Image 1 (cartoon, rainbow, N blue to C red):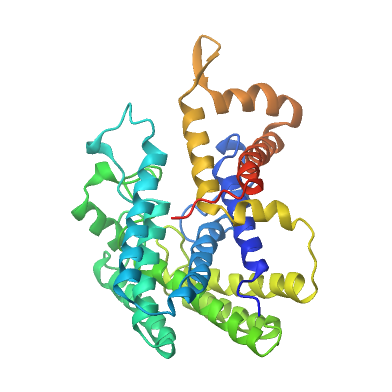
Image 2: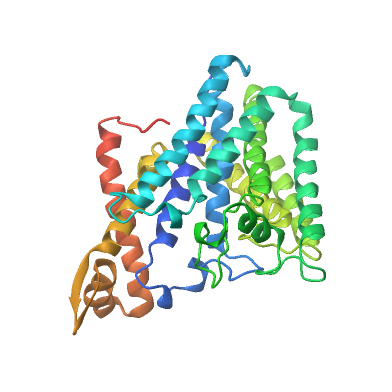
Length: 368
């Protein structure tokens, strides 16, 4: 019996390609709306990218723990803690390399990889300590607990707004404004410590999806029909919950968790049917290059983007960064403003893919 689903690596690759695409538009002022995050409450396709990646972390965990017989031995505990710390370390190397302008006073403690690290660590201990029959109840408990905390500790009547929510309050108390993300107009971290709680639920739902796929494969039955039902049910619950706890990616609200998980259940079901059942292989290699080396691909994309932002190019009487220069002097004149921004992003994805393809061909994979 196969121990791994090709469709899951493909979905991870699709997600990574999408993550790089939306993170590196040529010009944020001329980016098509679906490729932007919702400003606050609401949802766009871009908002699905990170939770899907985190969902797939949960899926992969099921396979990685199989060789340890799903037992929390001292060796496994050590590996979990080591991997958690390594993801934090990789994050800081990515964002502060080559450390020439590094300042501990302005260091952002939390980010994408730290959120993945904390979620991975928590879900590892949950799934290896608790009976599998408890996982749904644990997930429900996490989502309702987060809702209660947000409602109680946020400002009265406006507990879910940018400047009045409990996520911001806790981060300001623990870290101070200098250690938070400043891209929302005020110091506020969309990967805040408190909002990591529902992110754990996203990861745990991925683990549960993997368990279901294994169960269906064991009885030689396609998972598509039930995954479609589960997905639609989660989406319906999310839309109902949205009335009182708005769908919000930056707060990672419980309704947002269920909406994204519902979509991911449907995507996994469709890809599993297309690739495993129908045995279609169109573009598989392209996405496998990202999907089998996802941390490396993410690291390459971020390091390239950050370093390009530091390279100065002459522009009029002043200077601009290399990315902006390429957009205005190469992509915008050929494709126009919006299409040029998209063409720049696609080109950036292809550059990252080309680098990762070398590693793929040589079977070099970054294992954390």
